[in-house]
Every structure is written in C-alpha cells, then in structure tokens.
Length: 248
Image (cartoon, rainbow, N blue to C red; front, side):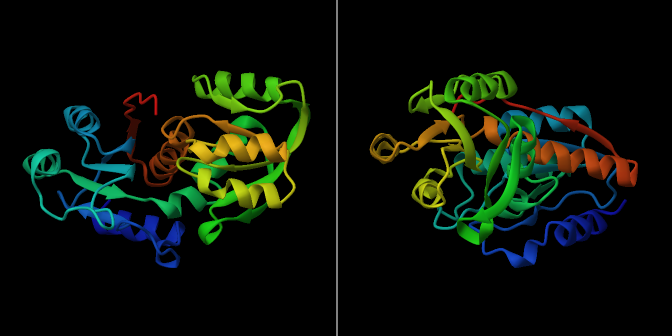
C-alpha cells in the first residue's frame, strides 16, 4: 500500500485530530512511498531503527517518536544519528502517542487491561486516556502483583497491604502517576501505571489505595503491537515487533 494511505487510515482509526498532544502524530520522517513491510516498536531508539531496517522494513511505527513539545528543535547528536539512519535507508517513521493510549481496542490501556484481567467501566484523566473499572475476579493485592509480574515479565513496585482484597481498579499505561489522585477520588482499591513519583507513596499510605508501578516500557509494549497486527491482517502487510528491553 502507499505510505499516504497508511497514514490516512491510521489517523482516521485512531481519531488523531481529536487529540491535543505533545508531539506530532502520523508521519514524522518520510521514506519510500510503497509500504509492504511494517515494523513496530515502543520507542524509536537507534537499536530499534537498526533492527527494523536490517529486517527490511519500509515503515516503522512507534509510540514514542520525536519532536516533543519544548524539546530543543536542533537536529544534532542522538536525534541527528537516528534521523540520518532513516533518511539513508529511505524508511518512514510514524508515531502515535495519546491516540494510541486511548484507542478502545488497540490502545495501550485497552491492551494492558485485557492482559491483566481488568473490565473497563469508564474513562478519566487528560482527554480520557486513563481507564477505571473492576477486576474480573476479586483478589488480594499480592495476587494482583504476581499477575502483573507474570504478564509483563517485570517485578512491579507496589505500595499497599499485599493481603488486602482489591476489586475496583484504575489504570493508565506509561507515565500516568499524575492521575493517582483522580483515581483515588473514583473510589478504586488500586491504581496501576508505569512510573512512580515521590508523592505516590504518601498518597497510597494515607488513603489506603494501593499503587502499582509496573514500568513505563512494560505497560506500553502491547498497543503498538496490536496496531501492527491489525494493519498486517487488513492490508496483507508483513509485520514484526522489535523490542528493546527497558527496565524503566
């Protein structure tokens, strides 16, 4: 298919125009017009770019791309090397940030909830990207912690009484810790996100609402993969996910 067709389809399906984002969504670096092989990755790091182009990707789709708000616009150093590699290989980079977090089927939060056995009952947070609902089966915080570790292949950071039963849950992949207070106000038993900030400990201790930080990267591996799998099936494209493990 044509690169522009790919961009337009994803943009429509993810409702890109609805979001006020911190970076451009869509084509960030333009490569060849014809797309037969798509690679996906969480972040457009040098390692992901090199692995994807070595495989023969025509376009690389990521959650974390380039040109973030308030960053230095100069194309030097790391940014120069990454973009130079894409231009030399004539490979496109497409990035989808908040629209991918929020999508009800392929989104990071939808996919995270599916893996962890969460049932969505509503949205909250910035542009409704965070989810709240319930566990399919009520369990102890310790049991939930072990489920997170098994599913995400990472030991989460947990604040709370691991013996306490939890049923109501809110979650936001990646750096969603700023939504913890909103989650508490919703009456949940536990909030699951990627990262932790210092104040999260005190909020959890003083409210009794448990807090789980399962890793920014670990909680955002599944949305971009799901999108890539959908595109491959719908348009007959080759697809491969390239992961660079990140403990943060």
